[in-house]
Length: 590
Image 1 (cartoon, rainbow, N blue to C red):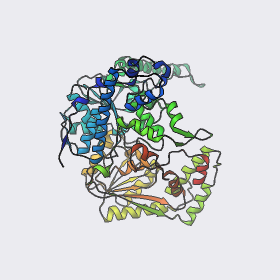
Image 2: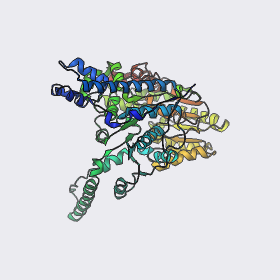
Image 3: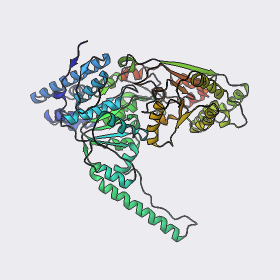
Image 4: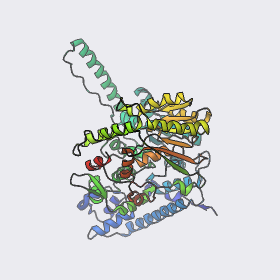
């Protein structure tokens, strides 16, 4: 197949971006009458909406010329999107990039560069979104459009980014970490290109994340002790104010390039993290996530609010137009979904492994159905029927958690039950997979307490393993990734979902889910720790399901066939129910 070379140079000038606010100015300043869409990003879709909804709106010659340019740009993006789906071979040279990206990654870089303003790269997990982000920043730098790049990540991945930067570039970088004083100096450095920071420290350093609260005197506290605590508070408060004063210019800085990794971290409109990340000023914005929707269309709206502010209108207006609710205000479904898909197209690209990695081995699934013993089943039924009136949502949730934990290990909930049907089944699988056939495996459980139970079981079996949970230091997680790959004696890596994002465990070809998180995207995150670039073997995913329990019934709710995600994202891999569970639904599960 002949290569197609695309010149991106004509599409990357930030000044060429022409927003809808300017359109209105050019056509007569009649914007005040519809202030609701004041900051909507300029696209042909939005211009069409304007023309159809405003009387007496005409486009003069100057505006028409710019509209024609926008049409050409969007046509170019659509062409790249289609090429990307087919993985059409292209050539692209990124100055300063070491190594050669996959063809679909080059197309992703082209798409981002042509867009020139903001893009959501929603490639399926394991397709190298980090590399595409780094490469896009380098390309913009080579054209004189970027002198700095801010990379915001979850804390668990903060030390993965430096490894990728060192692997693919010679660019200087700084990781924002350490004491507050050290971080101040790191933020103020001007001799680096990449700044890497996790969400928590971004908020703490630039947006007053940790607030000092003046202490109150305790009833039994003497004056000396209280004065000491008060002095300590004033000292901390002075340091915080000093840091805010010094970093004020950094907070107000106009970044040339901002990338947010695992962008589902800002899916909640009302969270402090979401609000402050969106306060970052930048010429180009890139969001990376394989799961832009995890059950709720509102999450996509929030992420797009960072990528292209105003594109989908305000939260209130978007909800009125696209969200269906019941009498109590709970979301029951969505409408006009194709309209959302059309609007985000110029700012969105997604590829699936099955389309671009033809040589990537398949994933196969094995559901191990476990029959609880008579004694276990008796206690389980008592738990399921205890204290969960359908009008008491909180009680029902507690009952659900109790039942899940009982299925995992009965004595976690009821210490009178000594039988462990699921654990016995797990030992059989590990014996067959690891000990008898020499495979490496990843073992997930939702509960840290369950890891404490599983660890000695693995040791008794002679299994050499690594462990990652929420308390594992972030730098240590990155090191474990390399250890698991290089050390042939390591049989298994055990962990909670703290290790389900971003880490590469392609050395394993078995993923064992001791329990299910009930979220399709989280389960996909688990699977794709092994099913990713570099994997040479078929990946087997083993799910444990206790028969006639909540573990079976909740699947019927969560995995019910629903095409909303397919309509928005353009694929059929993440089918899920886009509604919240009401009291009646929870009662059915129990």
